[in-house]
Length: 310
Figure (cartoon, helix red, strand yellow):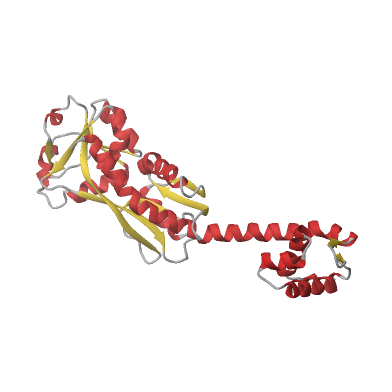
């Protein structure tokens, strides 16, 4: 039986007539004349090879074969309607899976809050957080491991685009009884003789680059480099050294009992970006979440900095 010749419109006519027991009312539901509905049924019966309805001058009823076939037609229409809903959700960025990479602080402190808020309007979008070192963000977006990434401003090459989301000043973290804690602002020259621990090679390089133009005796060199910012904050919390991070790390650092001091003369700013692929089209869900992040991240950063009253 050449069922490829069957149309969804024919199935719609079958179901409508079966429910309403009238060609005229089925036509009204479908926006067709009763003769057009009758033609659809006739075409369907021709393809199927059996009569679907028993017609009299008073009533329309399913034939025995029609009753047996009705469930299959209804099943087809349900699946088509489900497919239409899925396509509509995807088209309107309301469904899909988005893989977002970010370094520790953003992955643990910012993204979960962003996902919870986004889920209030897009509950079918599944956002998966992928912990990713700063050095790996761009490559993983480029090779397709990640749909999006959030992290410090880096060179992206030709396969990835970075859009600035917010700026964050570099700050000093130390214990409340640290000598520099008595100052509201700290100058770079004040750090010359201060033991510092750097979190990761990225931070180590950033500190070196920030003071590259300074005289040799004013340059800042960390006494130690650890892999994770939490380790650096833990070292600082014990008074063994202070540490430098972008200000948004305040979302995590306050739990260590540390105080934050802005570093000035000059103030150095780290830009945080949202990275998207250029070499392939982003899914509607990824594009929608990226646009949400571009608005949400600056607000999150402002709240974090305001909580420190600096």
